[in-house]
Image 1: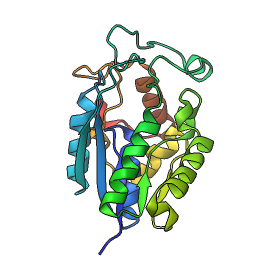
Image 2: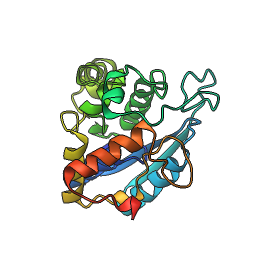
Image 3: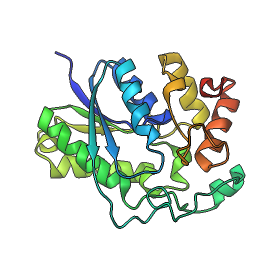
Image 4: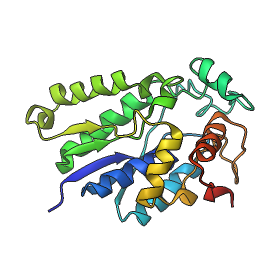
Length: 223
């Protein structure tokens, strides 16, 4: 039997590539998708499409963050729009940061992984996100790996670990990897605003466009 892995799947480009990496490595993939009241709820639907295409199992977990604290979960908040790459990189933690989101998600992923006896948890965090999101930094993920090792039965038994294969890659590098693995980029969703079509102006849309441009690959979502 194939070893199992839990993949944090958002419906976005990076997590889709992480899923296909896990699949390539021979894991029986279990995708964990969170419905946490995000504006861009379309990403939940897209995650389902991606998991189905990859022939992976899908777990959708609805949770509540009633205290809001992010423009992604509070429609009264303003999502940054029309910023330059420099402004995005040097602007500090943006309003789209969801307080402790990855800590919550990884804790849930650890619980699922132990329950199904998975050998690995995959997250698609990478270096370009870490400038704005503290829970996407390499040292944070390495520390959380220690939390799993020290705070779970599977970790103590050395049967579960956290993997973040994209952490040192640029968006363009991630897209190139995804292209080689056959990731269905046309099914992914990056826009924070959650409309019927990408807005092309939020930080996520701008970074996605930059990544495809630098990779020399046309974004199939925009065909």
